[in-house]
Structures are given as structure tokens and as C-alpha cells.
Amino acid sequence: MKTTNNAFWEEKKLEDMTQDEWEALCDGCGKCCLHKFIDDENAEDTQTTDQIKQDESLEFTNIVCSYLNTKTCSCTQYAKRTELVPDCVQLTKKNLSQIFYMPTSCSYRRLHEGRGLPSWHPLLNRNKKTVMHNADMSVRGKTVYEHDVDMEDFEDYIVSWPLNDLD
Ligand code: SF4
Ligand code: SF4
View 1 (tube, helix red, strand yellow):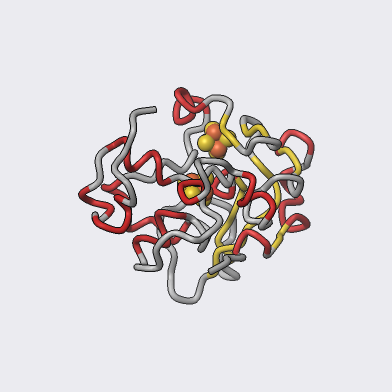
View 2 (cartoon, rainbow, N blue to C red; view 1 turned 90 degrees about the horizontal axis):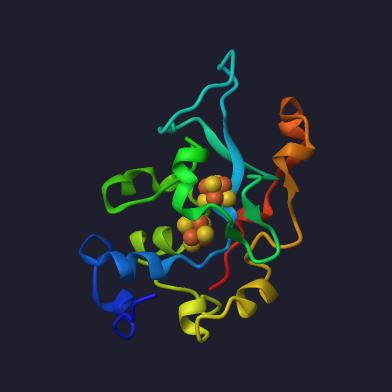
């Protein structure tokens, strides 16, 4: 990985970051690899969407994509992820309007909302994830793989912990 300027996230807007800076921002928590859905009582069937309406809510489950290494919380197929998983969330400068899909602790969401990076973020901890894991802010030890569950029963796997955030 190329080096980045110190505390670039405090000086630049997301839109102005280089690709290396953008990539470095990701905390590697794995929360965006959890299956989630929009709870809409009026919907008759399940469908994908990139919008959320005022009376709808986003629910997270602890069902995780099969390509996530649930110990390191890293994608095992990062280069091919959008090819292998068409609905894999790939947040870019161009689709920041879709950031509501991200958990509140997501670095991109925090910066987009002017909340800065949290103290447990790897960038503030010698690029190590240990503090994040210990602060319970990653998915480590909390998930089930999608290939191990009947996705028809996804409502049984709704959890609130992905919405937790610290400082
Ligand atoms: S939720 Fe955000 S910060 Fe965490 S792994 Fe996903 S993109 Fe990175
Ligand atoms: S393909 Fe990789 S980045 Fe995409 S949801 Fe699956 S584990 Fe996460």
C-alpha cells in the first residue's frame, strides 16, 4: 500500500481524496458485508433497491457474505468482489448519496456526516485492527455465513449491534 499524508482525513473532503487515501479510510470492520434489508410493511415481495423512503427502516442481520474471512474481517475476493457478488456494496465518491446503507460507524459515513474518525480506527492505531476488534466494532465472532442459513428465514437473524458506534 502506498503511503498517505498524516491525518489527511482531517484536511480533505471525501470528494478530494486520492484513491489511496480513500482506500486507507476503510476500517475493515466487515459490517458492510452483512445482509440487510429495508423493512417496508407495504411491500409484497423482496427486491433490491438503492433508495430508502421516509417511513422505511434499514435492518441489519448477522448473516454475512461467504467471501468474508470472519476472523480478519477482510474480503477474500476483494479484486473480483463486484463480479462475484453483484450487489456487493462498493462505495465511491460518486455514490455517496447511498451512504445510508452503511452502518453509522463506517468511516465514510462518519466523515460524510462531519463526525471524524473514532479513536478505535486502525488509522489511529498503527494500522492495526486490534483496538477495533476489542472495542466490539467489527463483525468478528458475531456472524453466520449465508451458505449456512435458509435465506427465507432472514428475519430470524435481525441484529442491532451493527448500528452501534463509539465516540
Ligand atoms: S462499513 Fe465502511 S469502514 Fe467498515 S468495512 Fe465497510 S466500507 Fe469499510
Ligand atoms: S464480496 Fe467481499 S466485500 Fe463484497 S460483500 Fe462479500 S465479503 Fe464483503
